[in-house]
Length: 337
Image 1 (cartoon, helix red, strand yellow):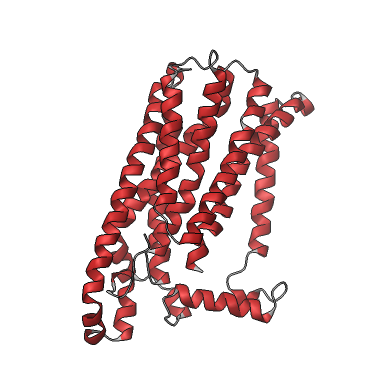
Image 2 (tube, helix red, strand yellow; image 1 turned 90 degrees about the vertical axis):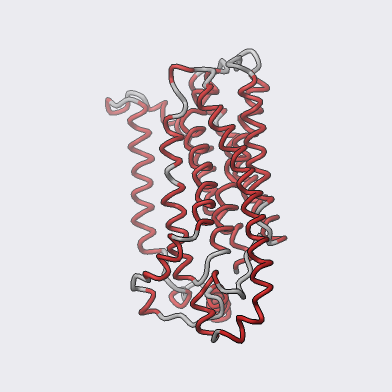
């Protein structure tokens, strides 16, 4: 159902947070294989983790199904019917044409490309991508700068990601409970800003104030991972019908993932351990994202008020089919805040 979308997305992206936790533990363990078969420890990390990924990818081809009707081996008829009704509701109550689903819908593509709110939603993903890539690549380096040895630094990179996974699911559950997206995007962004403000204020004294430094890193990571589910569900909830939503989600991901490029290069080796550029940009992403979230909710409120004023007139002027084709542009479609 649309109201539980954030939780489902958070479960999916929790894998990313938990991978950050277990990758540190795995890396510390696999590094002990240094010299086995004449290979360095870091080579074994790439070989074993890469092999597991490839095997899982092949398995997914056979295990993932396209429709509820293909799930008869583990779902009973009532459960399949429930899922089919959920799809019907997400379609906006319209019928689904399987043949048209396979065709490129140029009208929906145009509607998405001209929907400025999708680009704003993509900015949240850009912020999250930059923040997560940046911290994932540099967290062991940052913990090492606190005075910990290599293995200790790898192990200490795990707890922040465990906390991040718990944070992501918790924020998503409360967001779905109230069916309200903005606060559960804005609060994590504010947490990110606070976390990086603290670590930036240390001015590189990470080893001298390692307790404060580690706390600020954990705080930042706790804020980073709920952003993805909140932004993705907010965007998906406000695009209809399903064919347009699919394109809108893809557009958001396409634009937002540019942040990964920024995050990969914003921690400069020459600035270690102060990382003024990396920490400063991370603070900017958190602060600017918070402001944008508040402004976007305001724009949705204004749009909903405008739609409410012309809803009755629209019912008389357009047929149900015409209103359904309008999707989220329909006067009867109410934006989720």
